[in-house]
Image 1: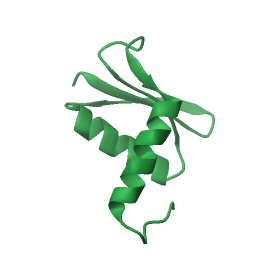
Image 2 (image 1 turned 60 degrees about the vertical axis):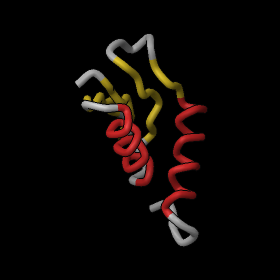
Image 3 (image 1 turned 45 degrees about the vertical axis):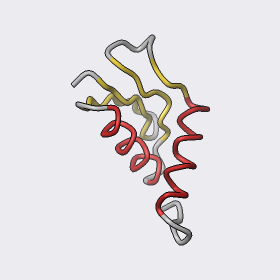
Length: 73
C-alpha cells in the first residue's frame, strides 16, 4: 500500500492507503462525488503528491467518462 489519498470530511483530515495509483484515483473521485475535499494523492511520502488543481482536472475527466447523465451527488 504505497499510494495514499489525503482528504477532508468536514473539519477532520483523513489519509487512505491504496495498492495502486488507479485504485487511489478511483477512490479519490468517489470521495469527491460524496462531497469530500481531496487535496493530495501521492506515492509513499507526502512531499511527493499530486495537488488539488491536478486532482480537480482528474475528477473532471472521470466525470466525463461516467457519461452525459452523470451528476455530482
